[in-house]
Amino acid sequence: MANIGIVIETEDGTVKDTNFGVLTAARGQGDGTIIALMLDGSADSAKEILGKYGTHKVVQISVEGADLSARPDLKARALAAAIGNYSLDALLGLASAQGRDLFARLAASMDLPLALDCLAVDIARQSVKKSHFSGKTTATVKMSGSVMLCAIRPNAIEAVEASVEVSVESFSPSVQDPGLVRVVEVNKEASDKVDLTEAAVIVAGGRPIASADNYAILDDCAKLLGGTISASRAAVDAGFAPHSIQVGQTGKTVSPRLYICCGLSGSVQHFAGMKTSKVIVAINTDKDAPIFEKCDYGIIGDLFEVVPVLTEVLKEKL
Amino acid sequence: MQLYVCVKHVPDTAASIKIVGENGFDDSSGKFIVNPYDEYAVEQAVQLVEKNGGEVVIVTVGKAAAVASIRAAMAMGAHRGILVTVESQFLDSQTTARALKAAIEQDGKPDIILGGKGAVDSEGFQTLYRLAGGMNLPVVSEINEMELGDGKAIVGHEIGGGAREVLEVSLPCVLGTTKGLNEPRYPKFPDIMKAKKKPINEVAIADLGVSVDNAQSELIKLEKVPERSGAKMLDGDVRQAVEALVRILKEEEKVI
Ligand SMILES: Cc1cc2nc3c(=O)[nH]c(=O)nc-3n(C[C@H](O)[C@H](O)[C@H](O)COP(=O)(O)OP(=O)(O)OC[C@H]3O[C@@H](n4cnc5c(N)ncnc54)[C@H](O)[C@@H]3O)c2cc1C
Ligand SMILES: Nc1ncnc2c1ncn2[C@@H]1O[C@H](COP(=O)(O)O)[C@@H](O)[C@H]1O
Picture 1 (tube, helix red, strand yellow):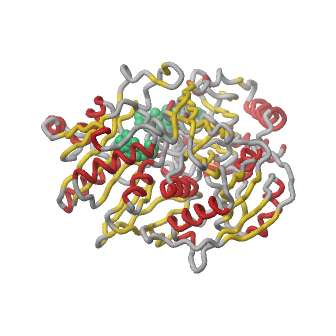
Picture 2: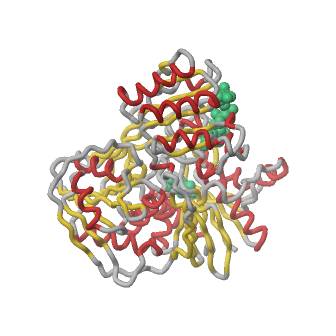
Picture 3: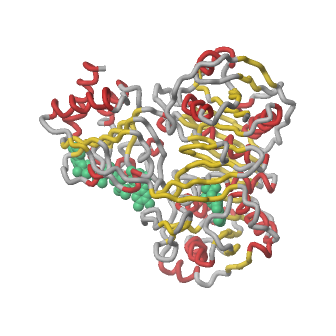
């Protein structure tokens, strides 16, 4: 029976929804013990929701006298100690910006195999599926090592509930920071925005959006769906949107349940960042636009007319 | 300053990939380029040397053809190159990191080692962490902001949700770059000609004492991602089309 650890990510103290897909993936591996590892947030308040998704044990990890959030290497060392203490066979987590950094530090410090941005995981066979060649192909990668480390693309695996009894304990390893890297400042933009790479719904605006202000039309619609907005490179290069919301080969990779393209031509480079979305909808004035060849549902029309109507209908029907 | 830049030679992202056998791809016909994220690293290194003096050395682990990417980086202003020759495009990242370490340590004493946040072919996002781990150096990746201080570097990157983090690392260090750090230059013709005369040292991976056996991760299968077969178009006036869409998303797809 495998012991599977899950690194839980929190935001302002609450467990992010995207963790539940990772827990679901862990549960799909036979009758292993699922151990949630928390480096921030509170295990006591997370206990109930984590139990709902099949967690057997929640472990609050801390290092005496240290602020783990300011010491990325120390965080990785604390996690390494937990892998030993709980005899983990595999450690899963989210391939968010922080997750990728943490898992890469951990893999390097323990010399273990790591797959980042996985779409599927098979612990018994020690293999994962992940994207290769900017989303054009899917690779099956076989890993061999005493512990397998996998960070999963947010939303790639649908969350399914399955309640179990859950216990809480704490673990305080005595580890030391190698003193190489120090966080000196964190700037949280004062915003109520959902994180793009973890959003369940994204409304994307392309070049025809024509100004930064016009993104408000998309934002109104996205907010109703609990989602956020993104942009094509053409829109970013034209100065209508910040690079931080660009999706595609040179931007972010996302995998929401629903991706609505408003005025996007359907370039290979944009699709490289969002083609694993569950449902893709396109709104485009040109009936021959290539995007209609590679999405699920299409509406021929002007985004400035269609999107406000969509927002209105959603207000009525949701 | 002695700067090393890790550059991978990768298939052009616009090119389509022809899968050969179970886990191979046809690398004989398509165009190859400098890994796009590594271009930011080359540009950063060249700018640092233009300001502070020193030398930029490109280090590449790849097949013989990878020399083209070293020349491309030299046309951007790098001074020398080291090509560690291997037989495969996909070594595991531990092996690549060991080869990079051996090549750099044999060559000189780095002040900064730069590379990209990830290679666009294998999408590994970890080689630089392993290189830093092996050399016991600090590492920060996905940086899009960098300043040099006294014996240290101050770097910034995104941590999700629009938040940013600023970190301090002492030199020598390893840094992974991404878009936003700088604008990589387009080399001019004379720079391309000059690059042809710059020295490249070629060394087989085995001669660095690095074994390619016992890889911890191995690519066993490559499959084309199936494309969607075309949209179901929703007709009628705007209101009708939108109402049909909302109904489908709610009742059939269950995504809203
Ligand atoms: C190396 C490289 C990397 C790249 N990386 C990225 C990347 O990461 N992300 C990315 O997005 N792109 C990337 N690109 C750019 C990409 O090739 C395309 O140029 C870009 O995605 C096009 O953006 P667009 O669809 O918004 O604009 P366009 O191609 O101009 O398409 C606009 C579409 O909107 C339709 N339209 C016009 N008016 C309206 C209206 N009022 N309502 C509805 N529809 C309308 C048009 O019919 C057209 O189909 C990259 C390119 C290269 C070479
Ligand atoms: N074969 C290679 N030769 C030189 N540098 C490499 C090689 N593979 C990876 N790198 C460097 O490591 C970074 C991250 O690559 P990866 O971990 O493979 O995604 C790349 O952007 C390069 O800077």
